[in-house]
Amino acid sequence: MKRFAVSATLAVLLCACTVTPDPEPAARFTVPGNYRAVGECAFATIVRKEPAVRVANLESQRLVRVYFAQGAVYGWEADFTEQGTDTTVTIRTINFGRSMVVDRIRAYVNSCAS
Image (cartoon, rainbow, N blue to C red; front, side):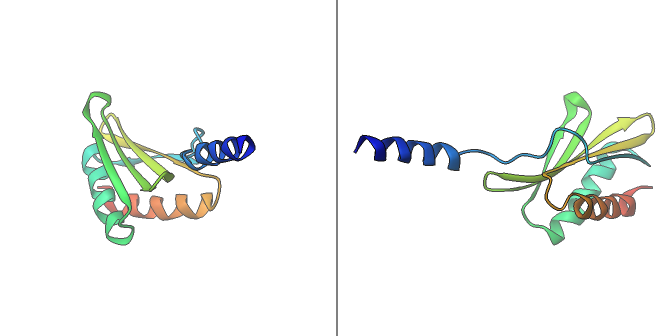
Protein backbone atom coordinates (compact mmCIF):
# COMPACT_ATOMS: atom_id res chain seq x y z
CA MET A 1 0.00 0.00 0.00
CA LYS A 2 2.83 2.39 0.87
CA ARG A 3 4.54 1.68 -2.46
CA PHE A 4 1.28 2.46 -4.31
CA ALA A 5 0.90 5.75 -2.45
CA VAL A 6 4.43 6.82 -3.37
CA SER A 7 3.88 5.80 -7.02
CA ALA A 8 0.57 7.64 -7.17
CA THR A 9 2.12 10.78 -5.66
CA LEU A 10 4.96 10.72 -8.21
CA ALA A 11 2.49 10.24 -11.07
CA VAL A 12 0.45 13.25 -9.91
CA LEU A 13 3.56 15.40 -9.62
CA LEU A 14 4.77 14.42 -13.08
CA CYS A 15 1.37 15.08 -14.68
CA ALA A 16 1.10 18.47 -12.99
CA CYS A 17 4.28 19.73 -14.64
CA THR A 18 3.97 22.52 -17.18
CA VAL A 19 5.84 22.27 -20.48
CA THR A 20 7.23 25.69 -21.38
CA PRO A 21 9.33 27.03 -24.26
CA ASP A 22 13.10 26.96 -24.10
CA PRO A 23 14.36 30.19 -22.45
CA GLU A 24 16.85 30.67 -25.31
CA PRO A 25 15.20 32.43 -28.26
CA ALA A 26 14.65 30.33 -31.37
CA ALA A 27 14.64 33.56 -33.38
CA ARG A 28 14.87 37.31 -32.93
CA PHE A 29 14.21 39.84 -35.68
CA THR A 30 13.03 43.42 -36.16
CA VAL A 31 10.14 44.64 -38.29
CA PRO A 32 8.85 48.16 -38.97
CA GLY A 33 5.88 49.43 -36.98
CA ASN A 34 4.57 49.96 -33.46
CA TYR A 35 4.99 46.92 -31.20
CA ARG A 36 1.37 47.01 -30.00
CA ALA A 37 -0.08 47.27 -33.50
CA VAL A 38 2.18 44.53 -34.89
CA GLY A 39 1.60 42.22 -31.90
CA GLU A 40 -2.18 42.64 -31.91
CA CYS A 41 -2.33 42.17 -35.69
CA ALA A 42 -0.21 39.01 -35.43
CA PHE A 43 -2.51 37.69 -32.68
CA ALA A 44 -5.64 38.41 -34.74
CA THR A 45 -4.11 36.66 -37.75
CA ILE A 46 -2.80 33.62 -35.86
CA VAL A 47 -5.89 33.03 -33.69
CA ARG A 48 -8.02 32.49 -36.81
CA LYS A 49 -5.87 29.48 -37.67
CA GLU A 50 -4.85 28.36 -34.17
CA PRO A 51 -7.69 28.95 -31.66
CA ALA A 52 -5.55 27.96 -28.63
CA VAL A 53 -3.42 31.11 -29.08
CA ARG A 54 -3.62 33.74 -26.33
CA VAL A 55 -2.37 37.31 -25.96
CA ALA A 56 -1.08 39.31 -23.00
CA ASN A 57 -0.50 43.08 -23.13
CA LEU A 58 2.16 43.93 -20.56
CA GLU A 59 2.11 47.74 -20.73
CA SER A 60 4.54 48.20 -17.84
CA GLN A 61 7.16 46.24 -19.81
CA ARG A 62 6.13 47.73 -23.16
CA LEU A 63 5.54 44.19 -24.38
CA VAL A 64 2.85 42.24 -26.20
CA ARG A 65 3.16 38.45 -25.79
CA VAL A 66 1.33 36.09 -28.13
CA TYR A 67 1.56 32.45 -27.09
CA PHE A 68 0.19 29.00 -27.81
CA ALA A 69 -1.17 27.32 -24.70
CA GLN A 70 -3.25 24.19 -24.52
CA GLY A 71 -3.70 22.87 -21.01
CA ALA A 72 -0.31 22.78 -19.32
CA VAL A 73 1.61 22.86 -22.61
CA TYR A 74 2.99 26.18 -23.81
CA GLY A 75 4.26 25.32 -27.29
CA TRP A 76 5.64 28.72 -28.24
CA GLU A 77 5.57 32.40 -27.39
CA ALA A 78 6.36 35.51 -29.41
CA ASP A 79 7.27 38.73 -27.59
CA PHE A 80 6.77 42.04 -29.39
CA THR A 81 8.83 44.85 -27.85
CA GLU A 82 9.44 48.47 -28.75
CA GLN A 83 12.68 49.25 -30.56
CA GLY A 84 12.39 52.95 -31.35
CA THR A 85 9.79 53.14 -34.12
CA ASP A 86 10.27 49.45 -34.93
CA THR A 87 9.29 46.20 -33.23
CA THR A 88 11.65 43.47 -32.06
CA VAL A 89 10.08 40.01 -32.17
CA THR A 90 11.56 37.29 -29.97
CA ILE A 91 10.24 33.76 -30.50
CA ARG A 92 10.73 30.94 -28.00
CA THR A 93 9.54 27.38 -28.65
CA ILE A 94 9.70 23.93 -27.19
CA ASN A 95 12.36 22.00 -29.11
CA PHE A 96 9.95 19.94 -31.23
CA GLY A 97 9.24 21.53 -34.62
CA ARG A 98 11.25 24.65 -33.82
CA SER A 99 12.08 25.85 -37.34
CA MET A 100 8.56 25.16 -38.61
CA VAL A 101 7.06 27.26 -35.78
CA VAL A 102 9.52 30.12 -36.34
CA ASP A 103 8.86 30.20 -40.10
CA ARG A 104 5.07 30.20 -39.58
CA ILE A 105 5.13 32.99 -36.96
CA ARG A 106 7.59 35.07 -38.99
CA ALA A 107 5.25 34.92 -42.00
CA TYR A 108 2.30 36.11 -39.88
CA VAL A 109 4.37 38.92 -38.36
CA ASN A 110 5.74 40.06 -41.72
CA SER A 111 2.19 40.32 -43.08
CA CYS A 112 1.39 42.71 -40.18
CA ALA A 113 4.48 44.93 -40.36
CA SER A 114 3.95 48.33 -41.92
